Length: 447
Length: 183
Image (cartoon, rainbow over all chains, first blue to last red; front, side, top):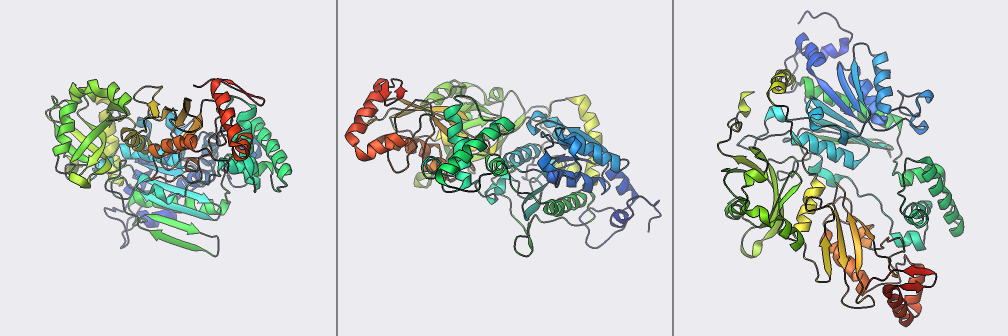
């Protein structure tokens, strides 16, 4: 046994200082591990709400010293029942700042940087700095964005295996009332968020004509005021869900509507709930899910135990049911998949490149349209876009890609031969030959 | 993974001196799927598409419909499309920019088309939506009304509905509402 000096995290030491049978691969127990976690590991917590508060507390108490938290919201009175780092006097202050301050006051030695901004406002370098990203979010858009960012760091070697040093792990939690999920995402190994986006049920949308003609529920009345009446009265002015006056207006219109049709149940908080799509949150569900996420984070970083594979669902609605499912990744995922490796000379024009894809045995792609980093290099249709992009055909692809020696290009077209053609969208890893800096393409094994 | 982070820490210091050029954000999955939808568009000859923000912003575009049949023959109707980054998990947001006398389109440009809201499925695409919109002009229906008055007239007096549509399209009043000429 190691003769380590006792630390504040005595119980954590039992995990980090001793070998075991159930540990993860490459686990090297010892005081050095404990110190390295403090010194080298930077964790980003995305969201400082119900899950975020719990996550920051849990991670700080699990031996992580360098935490960052990002959240664009300010504290509201309705948060106080579960977002326990906040007090009444904090209402109106940025969540990230208050949460960071409170945890630092309580847990000595922990350093938390707060970022009061939108996740899109940060440059990619900001995200690349972290060892792991933990998500406590409530929207698909935000998850999808962070997932795309984390996966954009991922590189594959020539055998389509992920290069370990480019993998940015994520741990994602989510709750809704008594239900929740915790999952780990190791881009290139487990499914990424986009591989399994179908897991999220579509948002309920009422037919507009039902809202306009035959409302039957309180929610119908609220959506009528929000989607139809607002535009009718405020021509041109966009509705801002974070403006209390706007919300009050929608609420009072919804009440009128409900009275007209004799529908009970329209309240201000229901109005907020329907319009902002707020899902009911329960403190203890957040605590359970966050705890699972924090532990998985510790396991991924330290290797002290095998990790969750890879998706935990918790359901406390009727009794208690919990289950772990191993989802598989979509090898052709546009976000995390390796894509098809294509090596080219810098002189190849876009037209030649497109011809080449048709003959490529792994692609057999005809009628190809090409896009690179948001720029549409060539579009087969509609005619208006074809015309605008046609002049690119005789330009070398290397120039069109701003002379980047290797990068991702997305193409779509018809795959296959004869009458078995099928429309498809593919990711390509284009590498230009003979450019400095690409010689290290297959150095993956080195690290 | 801890070893990796130590290695990376050193790498980062080296990289900072070398070149500060980090990777650039990828296109969202929604953008990519939309790119496919757009490049595979097969529009009826009555519909044209335009991109007000140029060839690199496909997420906002406009569709012009010139019905070749039915009550709205001869009119020109402009629709704006807004597509989100999680398309096709969410349907595109569609508004009619031309004020129209139509049972299923209100005066603010809201459109009652089932596949734009309750019946949207990720397997549908932009082409389906455009055909759906086109269909609204060849076969307006009074069963899903957004413009209550227009729906009532269509149901009870199709002849008068025809006259009202013509009045509106020529530019003029139908009841209390003024419509700009769109022929």
